[in-house]
Every structure is written in C-alpha cells, then in structure tokens.
Image (cartoon, rainbow, N blue to C red; front, top):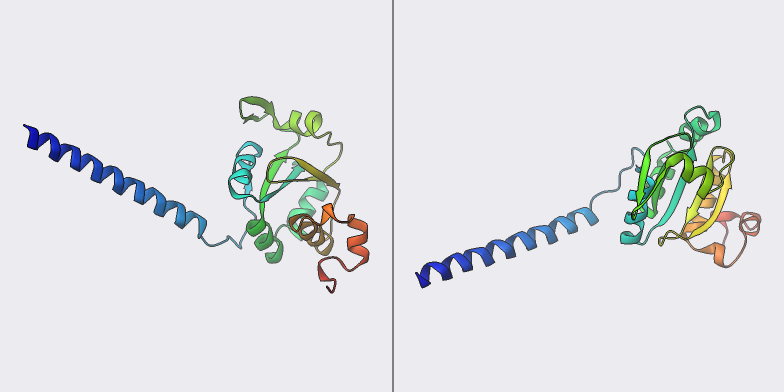
Length: 182
C-alpha cells in the first residue's frame, strides 16, 4: 500500500513539474512570438491596461467613433502603414475606445462604459483623440485630431523614448523629430 502511495505521489509530482515547464515554455513562446506587421493589434481598454503593466510598454488609447470621418482617415492613411503597424505592435499597447459605445469595461472592479470613459474620465470632446499613457496607466498627454503619417510617427517616438520628460513636443518637432541628428 505504501509503495502504491509513493508511486501515485511521484506521478503527481512529475505531472505537476511537466505542466509547470510547459507553462514556462508557453510564456517564452508568447514573448518571442513574431510581431504582427499586417495590422495594429487593438485591445479593449481594460485588457490593454493589464497588458501594459505586464510588459512595461507605453499605451496609446485611440478614442474614436464609427461616424467619424477623420477616424476613418487615420485608419486608412496612418494605422494601415507597415512602419506604424510594426512600431505600435513592437513598442505600444494599443487600445481602441468607441466613444459612443455602451460596452461595459471592468477596470479592476470599477465598471464603466466606453462612452463614459471617453466623456467623463478623459473629457474627450472630439474624435479622433489619442491619449498616451505610461505603462502604469498614468496619463501623459492627449493629442486631438487627424495626424498625418510623419507627424504621428514623431508622436510615437517622442512618447516611447520618454522625451516628454526632457522637452516639449514642439521643440522636438522643430529639431527634426525622430529624424534629428544626435
């Protein structure tokens, strides 16, 4: 009987170790998974906040509306470009919030609709509005309105490199933005 118990216990321990190793391998695979270069990976607000904390990536929140012409123009002219897709998927957690949506989010037990998040929490008055956040979820700054490709890329580099702590965006742009010589 004792032998049987030891065998069952040994089997249980072996299975537990194998499962733990498999989970560890899954994490390695997820971390080293190739970056999607075909489209920006947009997440809901609540999921994006969690992922940013886990990965240490800055957050870009795109407040949008289905009827918004400039939002559609951003999708077509900016978010569809390979350099934007690759940069955002590599260095940002990208979140899309529909400012008209009644969809409920659960942010660590705090429930709020996308519409109320946009209007009450972020005070969005026009679309598109982009909010940049630190990986902790702390707010950095908003950028409102349509942004052409080069201007938007400058914004992405400016925030990702924490340059907002050293200079203002206008000076960064005047000095050549992401293309400036160091």
